[in-house]
Length: 169
Image (cartoon, rainbow, N blue to C red; front, top):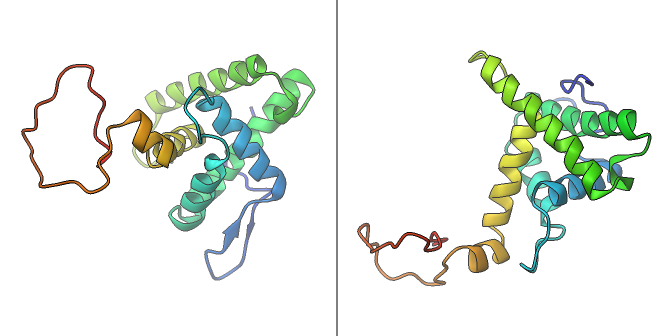
């Protein structure tokens, strides 16, 4: 497996945390996001991945986390090419799922063996951002969750029936 702690495609200016993704990495982000959480009959899922990944990694991750995230993105593509002889973006959905399922299994083992000071696995970061991005998107908040644009008062004991959607607001 490729060392995901390297950072080859992303740019970072010395002295400031000015970080950006290459055009190829942005397209790969879309493909990885679409594989983690594929588009279904819920509209509006396409291409929000790139905005949440870019925004959170650029503005909220420290330089070490950014290196891990980008190194992981590069590792996904390199591992996929090694296994299937084509880039991730050209692979079938079955090949992509097979690749990410293998990475997910590696991540689970990494978490079991992880020491407290060890960084998070890049795939955990990607999965967390994918879910955060979806449930904070308009489609996720209004169609997968219950949403009230202007909530009334807070009611901590509002009745909940098993099977009800969770609240977005």
